[in-house]
Length: 147
Image (tube, helix red, strand yellow):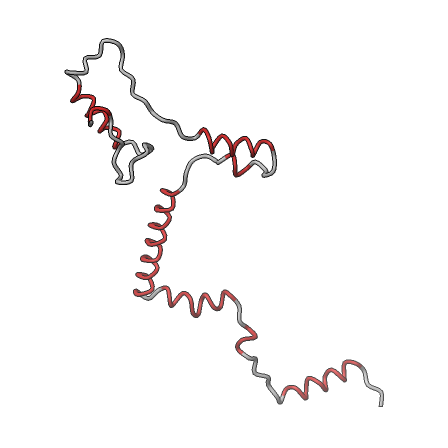
């Protein structure tokens, strides 16, 4: 017998009407369904809210601490290609000319006898400067008035 396509499709639909396929739950999973069914109820619990607040406060504290570790500027040695004359110059400049001795010079007519206490106070004031090289016991080198 000859059949049309419409008749064949009708037969297939009739045979399917008795059987129903149950879809598997993971086949219909998507992100919005997960957010609505699982994630949102979890975040609405008081313990979860407290945990999120504590976590973000910790992250804020860590971020603020990190900002204190950042230095301004950029080291030239980091951006100049190695094995170049420019890099060798910057390396030599840092190696040989980044440290200088400091001297305190008094002018003519300075009365050392009456100003010894002021000179010692000035010497002690250099303790607050963090770029002054100290001895192994973390004290300033002795000056001539200490001898």
